[in-house]
Length: 258
Image (cartoon, rainbow, N blue to C red):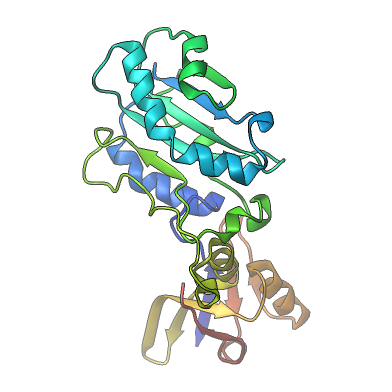
């Protein structure tokens, strides 16, 4: 039996490959962003006791920000798209695309935001800016307090941005009891990192894309283990694929609840 595996990446903003899959899912329905305004909203650490406190305060007020912007610009409709990211310090900031093609007064936008600085740029390309590509490369890039949420909202689009695509991630919700620890974002990211997609071929049976969880912490730990046993490891360019020994698969892998 031939057994081939690749690293598991669900469609999400939490890895480069996962974000690429999510982007290609959304791309056909996205408008051209050329001449839109690209904003970065930051938090002033002097206004908040911690990064988490700033996040909790600002995330629920983003919709009021867009309403204030519309009032300031004198328009009734405004297409927008935002995504959450984090500085290395752990403080959150939001990248925002606004469908507004005229010059804006940055001082007025800062007052509309009211939580820190605002940077405004002019989009020169129709495609989604690179800063929207992914939220983090690993869970180590995220602040520990953020990993305690179950389904943190990391992006949102206005209802009129595109059709037939969900406009938000599920709403932030922290666990109500310790029995729900498995639902935490941090636990979910660790489980994804320790899961691979396996193809079994031969013996008149073929299983395509079966997701299995390993006893290792990451895909590369599996590769190291296989190399130590002189088993095949094939990593062609950016396509990470390994050819596994059948007995090793059944001894080390199990079905994953991803």
